[in-house]
Length: 223
Image 1 (cartoon, rainbow, N blue to C red):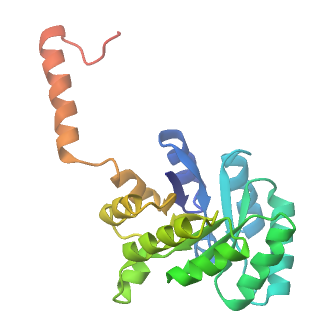
Image 2 (tube, rainbow, N blue to C red):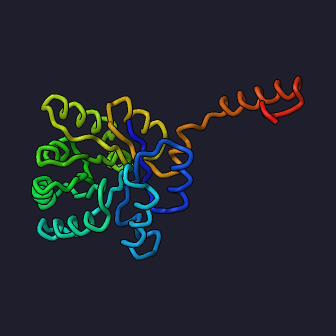
Image 3 (tube, one colour):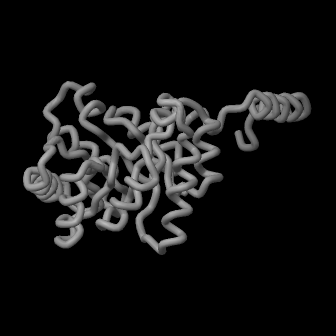
């Protein structure tokens, strides 16, 4: 199971890469716009921070397949290896995914709300599909159930695409997606940090240090 950061804030990316086993960064037009910088310059800086082995996910803006393909080729040329082009699961997007798959450009089908959108994208050749868990919950459906059904469909029909669960409100949703078989999750830095947070862990660490310090009069093993 892969952990991805859903942010374009460079300082947060650097900090989280230093602390956690982060496999890559996901972005979208809204996230990029929040940084209010030239988009390509920012994406290249993120790619430099990630290095060649970690993944970067970047979304097209066009809504016609021919223009999606042009944008995808441009992004891949500028950003290089391990760049995954995010394509929305509209009809023109599926058409673009088919073409991009044939020419070797990796894609992620995004804005997935139903299992059949995911299956269609996988059959078209998408490397990843990204169901929006909390947004599905917000329309009175079950986001984790959708993830589970996507995973089940992929296994039944021997589809090679992987699932990146996205759009989370809390740690429980993330954990339930992991249990449902999601290959990856993407979340903002705050939620990534909350995956480790527990008051009993903090208390335990404090007690260990206190007990040690009472006998040895220092907080570290080595002075």
